[in-house]
Amino acid sequence: MSIVESFKLALSSIWKHKVRSILTMLGVIIGVAAVIIIVAIGQGAKTKMTEELFATEENAVDLWYEPIPVEGQDESEMSWEEPVLTSEDVEVLSKVPGVKAVIATNQGWGPMVYEDKQGEMQITGVGPEFFTARNIQVVEGRPINSRDTDGLNRVIMVDTKAREKFFKNKADIIGEIVDVNGNPYKVVGVYESPIPEQYRSEDGEMLMPRTVISMMFGNREIEQLAVVASDPEKISETGRLAAETLTKAKKLEDGQYNINDFSDYEKEVDTVINLMTLFIGSIAGISLLVGGIGVMNIMLVSVTERTREIGLRKAIGATRGRILLQFLIESMTLTSIGGLVGIGLAIIGAMMVSKWSPITATVSPIVIIIGVGFSAFIGIIFGILPANKASKLSPIDALRYE
Image (cartoon, rainbow, N blue to C red):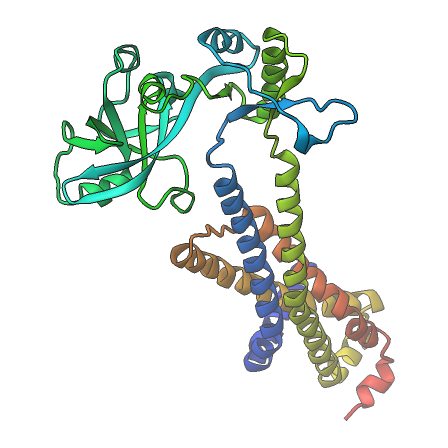
């Protein structure tokens, strides 16, 4: 009997005992579906968490000043002042290999009032390079340009959150005058903030020429520098090189520039989520074990029911290996069908999770292949005992079996 004929016989046997086969496959179906959905949710959660944690970074990394403590001096007793950053520093950083762009910003907070609405706004001072470097989407009006920074123009841009709060009933807000920190400013644009909404201030955010922030709050014109890497995969390497270059350019002796390297933290996040996925997946995998035991049990019943058939096949020349292969194929076919149904349910479940939750759960082709392969493996492992029992039957005793 060929392998093709063995598969046909296996399908015939499953079809002949439909209810029993379906009940036997339930454990495998539930186990495969549960494990795949949990893995998909785990991967989706990891992607979502990584995106939110590092959304403000994209392929940019901030440079920050770190004083070098004097030997024997406690850090709490240290007094130090950050070096003054200038346009020359921006020029130096722009020439660092791997740096695509340099972003210079400063910060401020202030009340914004428009008609009967007011709120405390987080204000970021920017230059024209900010929008292309950070890939900021301008949804209304125009971005802040060099004329605004050079001319100290009192103009602002608000994010979509602030637009919704302060100008909800306005179809067009470009040119509107608002009061910021007691001074009038003209709205020239609305932008989509790259920072996730839950990390933004309640009233939204605002952009302003950094020269104007310096004038209004008395800040330095450049308080923070960030570099954008040409290759996102080399963001940490490029950032460290930029920090070293800036330290040397400013000839610092009592401090140095460094970067916020999130790679170690990201690895920790991956490890925690992977461990949780493995733990929960292992619990779901218990149903696979139960399903496998169910398959073994039903195959033992099948061997008992087909004892005379086995004896007849042996009497006409079927070898022990052929009988063993036949029952292994039947067991493997049963679990493989259950695995395919489980994968189908997992795909539907992942689609529902993606639709009704912020997590995008996707079932990758490699997971489908592993699911089918593991289902077949379960059938082989738990089918060995029944198949071995069938292959060892004596043809004379089998034919006498009532």
